Length: 171
Image (cartoon, rainbow, N blue to C red; front, side):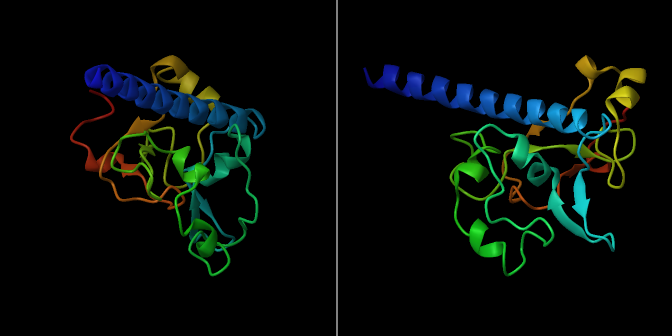
């Protein structure tokens, strides 16, 4: 019976992880629909171009059950006003995690985007759904990836740079 319980828990964790990534994808498409079909930027920057938040923060208002609450988007995540709000794991951080992963029940994210030229998430600027459709197509373009042991908080404007991968977008 213990094996059945463990198996059921593993299926539940996998189901929750899949639901979380699906919700992230839907939120990104909803963001796009309200922003001239542009996907969220990989990094939200202030007026001087300094990184403030990750794309995950941009999607919060579009995620099921999420709200910005007292989070001040005009300040970086690690500002004196925002930092206390992010001091402990919460339902918001869990939206960007896979249960059972190293990130679960921490402030870290399990989900990342690949950033760089020729990706849907360049370090500067934004890509539209039309741009993706004209190239590889929406159904064959990688948007969100799961990675373990990244030690990157869900609000941190940091993801996986394409240049760090050992592949070419042309391969």
